[in-house]
Length: 592
Image 1 (cartoon, rainbow, N blue to C red):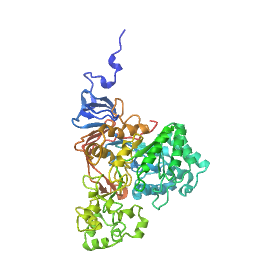
Image 2 (cartoon, one colour):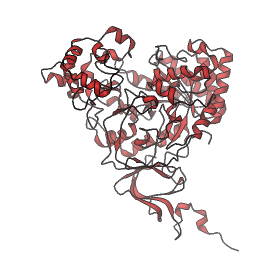
Image 3 (cartoon, one colour):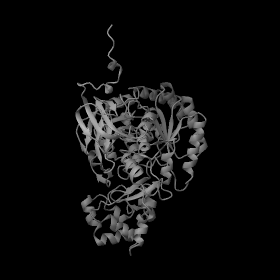
Image 4 (cartoon, rainbow, N blue to C red):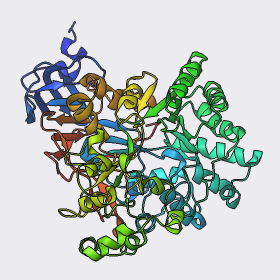
C-alpha cells in the first residue's frame, strides 16, 4: 500500500521543496502580527492573495523585499470613514491609503447615499455636506447615482476598480428619507408601517453584504440649512425595529452618535437592543470641556451594560478631535471679520497678496467678529474668533499634543503684539500655508491624558479617523501613522503604548469587531494585506489644502514618509510613497 506523502498534510508554507517559489518574500523584518503577541524577526511569504508563511526562513520568492530593521504588520482596518461618495469615483481613496489603510468602512454617523430616490439626490448631498463638511459641489459633480437600493449601491461599488478594499454600513438618514419622504425631513414619528419597511430594507442590505447600521442622535449634526438630521429624534421602537434586522440575519453591528442628554435612558435602549438582537452596539465617545467627567460616566455605563449581558463598546479617537485653521481652510480665526470675509472668493495667491497689504491688515485687525457672519457660520466659529489660548501653532512635523507655550496667547505675550496681530502675521508669513490646531474634544487638560485613558480601556475600539470627511477643517485619516509615531515612538508628555498593543488596535481588534474574518492578522491563509514600515523614519507631513475633488472641491490631505510598501491582496499598491497603479482592492461584503 502506498503511504500518503506527509508533506500533503502540512500547510503549503511549510513545504520547502526545491521547486517552491513564493510570489513575494519579505525578508528579515520585525513581524508584528496583529494579535498583540511580542514581535519577532523572520520572513513573511505571500502566494497569490494569501499569506503563506509567517516567521522562520521562507523559500525563494519571485520577488524578495529586504525588510531588515523594518516593521512588517497587517494592513490597517479603518472602521470610521466617510468615503461613501468618493469611493464611487476615486480608486485610490487617499489620504487613507497613503497611511497604510488596506480596508476602510463607510456609512458612519447615519449619512450616506443609499437607498435613494432620484428626487432625493440633492437632499442626501445636503445632509452629507452639512454633517461631514464634504463639498456639495464635488458630490453633485462626482456621484454617478447608478443605484437606488442599497444592494444596487454595493453593486456599483463592486464594479469600480480600486486600490484598497471598501465596505459599507446602512445609514439611517437616507433609509428614513427613502421610506418616509418629507415626513422624515420634518422628523415626524415613524409609523408601524414605516418601521416595518425600514427593517425589511435593512435586512435586504445586510444580506447583500452591509456590515451593519448607523444613526446619529446629536444636535451637532445638521444640514447646510441648519436643520437637524432626519433621525435625530427617532423613537426607540424605530431603532428596535431596524435593529431586529441585524438579529434576523445574525450579522452586522449597530452604531450611533448621541449627545447622551439622558445617559441612563440611552444605555437602557442600547443594552436592550444589543441583548434582544445578539449583535454588538457601538457609540462614539469623546470628552467634553464643560463636563470633564462625562467620558468616565459613559465608560462606567459601558461596563454596567456588559455586566448585564449586552455587547456595548465605545469607539474612541487616537488624538484630540481638532480643527485645522488657516487662511484657506473652511474656518479661520478671522473668518467672522467682514474685511477678511470679503476676500473669500479670491485665489490663494491673490488673497495672500491682499492680506499682506498694510491697509487691509489694519482694517481686519480693527474689526470684531460680526454677529451677522457668526449667525451663518458653524457654532465653533464664535470661540475660535476669541479664544487665543486654545489655538496652537501646528508646526511641521505637526504637533497634536502641544503645551501652552505653543498657544497664540503665550507666543503673543512674548512680543509687543496682541494675540490677533501675532496670529495674523504668523498665518500670512512664508507661503501663507501655515496652520493652527484648535482641539475641540479630548484636550480638556491640555494634554493627551484623556486620550490615553480611552485607548487603554479594554472596552473601547479605536476609530474616528473620519477619512474623506470634514474636508476643509480636519485631516485625521493619518491616525494610523500617528498611532505609531506619537504613541509608540515620540510621546514625551506622558506614557506611551507598546508597539504590539497599538498594531493590534489598528488591525485584529477592528477587523474582528465588524466581522472582517479573513484579515487583520499576519497568519497563514489570511488575506495578504501587509504594511512594511520604517518606524525610525516614519513622519507625518504638515497638512496641505488641495482642490482635487470633482468641480475643484477642496480638501485637506496629509502626506507621510516611512512606508516602505503597502500590499493589498498580495500586490504592492505603494512603494516608498509612490503609487504603483495596480488595483487589487474590492468591495468586501459581510457575507462574502
